[in-house]
Structure formats: structure tokens, C-alpha cells
Image (cartoon, rainbow, N blue to C red):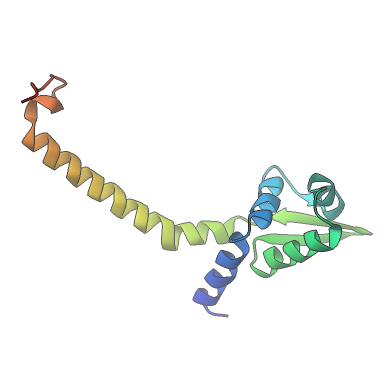
Amino acid sequence: MSTEEKFDLIFKALGHRMRRQLLDLLVDGPRTTGALCEALADIDRCTVMMHLGVLEKAGLIAVERRGRERWNHLDALPIHDLQQRWIGPYAAHAVNVLGQLRDVVEEAQPDAANGRKIPQR
């Protein structure tokens, strides 16, 4: 599977609020599928399992079976990869643009940069 296909799966998985909610529940540590179902009592077990399947396919969770229990573990590395590839560069660009804007404003109004009020005209 190509890197772009992996990103497609991650974006798809993160695109649904219920799956993001499941990931939020796993931030503090692994939980059984039963515990996740209890936490999301407004949806049925089958729907929770479907969402967990999408998260697992995207590599966002790892599943460990212990006897009859299914433990779901958050794998944050795909989110880190997403941040490195998409969010970080765009955020850096936005910060750079804001820095340039600040420099232009400060050059146009040097007294404002020193904390003094500029009289209104």
C-alpha cells in the first residue's frame, strides 16, 4: 500500500466524529470493546465494532485478544505521520505569513511596536 493510500485511510477514519470519539477514549490507555460500548451507550455494539474496524484498517488502533476480551490500543504514529506530512508544513507557512504581516505593521507604525499609543487621525 502506498503512503498516499495510507493517508487516505487515516483521513477517512478521522472524518467521522464517532471514530474520533473512540480515539479520544483510548488516549488514557487501552480499553476493551465492551468498555468502549458502555462509554458510547447511545449506539449499538455492531456500530462500535464497524467503527473500530475502520480505525484498525487505518492503523490508528491495534487490537489484542486476551481470552474472550478484545483490547483496543491507540497507535498515535499514523497521526504523527499525518501531522509531519500535512499539518506541520501548512502551520509553519501560516506562522511565517503572520510574522511577515507583523513586520509590515510594525514598520508602518514604529511607536505601536514599542507599546506607545499612536494618535488616531
